[in-house]
Length: 107
Image (cartoon, rainbow, N blue to C red; front, side, top):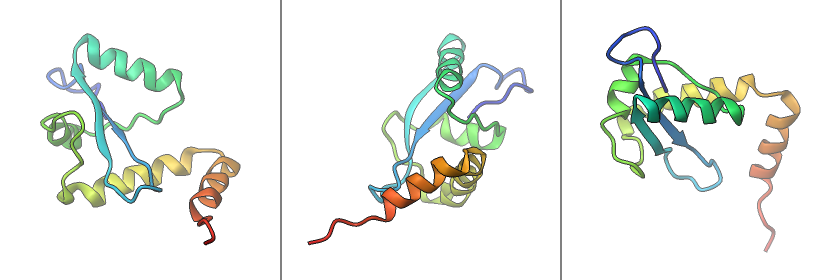
């Protein structure tokens, strides 16, 4: 998450990690200001990770500690971001992830 429009938010970023297979909420995996924020964004772009810009979400997420799960009050907003990001991926990549997530081990 980043915001390039507002001067006070321009150089801040938060990275979230979400693994639907664990059933856990997304976690803050990186956050920073200035050069660290620029490095987070550069790594995201380098690895084709979707960058979503929202000053409102950034304000809340930047206050969380590394490793923290997002608060329940943000579940809906973050779910919409995740759904949007999945919509940007090539269809076959999304289908493969869904197939692997839906294949439960037989016992």
